Length: 366
Length: 180
Ligand SMILES: [Cu+2]
Image (cartoon, rainbow over all chains, first blue to last red; front, side, top):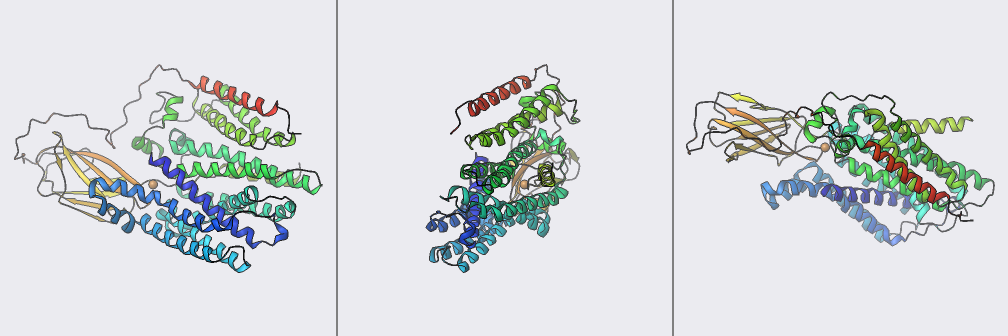
């Protein structure tokens, strides 16, 4: 139960940070390089507070965990004031209250100075939030830097997409917007990759073997989902841009919205994963938490400590992977035939499910 | 294919390999008495060492076979070590130690281990002879040997269902009239 609550709130916190980043970024950019933003600016203080409040769940989890043994007062003292998670959260909350007060007093869009300060303030929130995560706690500063880079890149990318997709009305200056946003987004993706690789060096998961655990499975689904996001990014940053440059009539808004929705889904999967046990050593983790119900459901009674992937090229697995790839390839076709962009969300989601099952069957047989 | 596309596809392949930002939880590394140990010295202290530093607020509780619980008189947490001092030495018997801690990553963890005390000290309270009993979901027990079940895998049905729903959705998306 608390797992789903935490997933929901964590996704909400990242969404709020992304909205703030996107809002401040677009306010900073000159009017000729962006569509007209219609986000109600008096909501920004609220969004800021929400980013802090929604991050409370990990602390709540600690308090609920301790309370039966220690009583409520002591649990709150230990969880909120003495634990690292609680202390960092208090810092985050204080910072978000300060930023909210600033944004209440000064409209973010009123001058370049205020939007610049809002952007710096938002980045402070991102940095503190990264300090709350696993990475910083395990490997100190280097883990924190990698996590911050990751979260910052996600917020710029998703924030820009959400602001431009959901809170703009015209697309008159879309081309000049894409001219700077596409390279920015590519930079963000690259940053996410590099940070991820740095982190992988520390986690070093037994990647294939981890598919018997919820964590590994979520990672695999996330990767398929990310493939869908990249196809969408290709349509948005490549095809639509070329069409607009040639003066063909396209409405990019639904497509950019669909991409933003897909990224939020990936953020939600990540939020869910961050509570699961990462498979340092798979066999050991299985002893501690058991095989995932999903794996047990697909392959009843299959797991044993020496289980290795077979990769025997099972027909069913190969077929599913092929279907998944076809589903992804249909996304650009959807665009070419001028059909609903939201169909792409369905296609990407289905591709993730089919591809996920396909890879598992390929690896572990029928 | 021009170079732009090669670069784009290369990027896609890269992101495929990116893991998420998650870390291992803090597990119990070792304990005194250890899991499965038989101790012939009087036990008045439990020491639990974890894989990394842990937060204040952890606890450990002992339960003997008869279901009596023993709470330590004091618990001290320092660095990666939890030290529980018992009010008096444990009477002979089998014990399950149930621990609860908060890892530095902020994740609550719990688990248990067993040990037996054979120091020649019997309980002052009359206790029925100890009967080995199944412990409730012990953390460090070996996984039961795999039972080769003849249950057929539902994989084929799952795949069929997924592909069918893919067909339905693709049909629904593409066979309607385009928006003009
Ligand atoms: Cu953890």
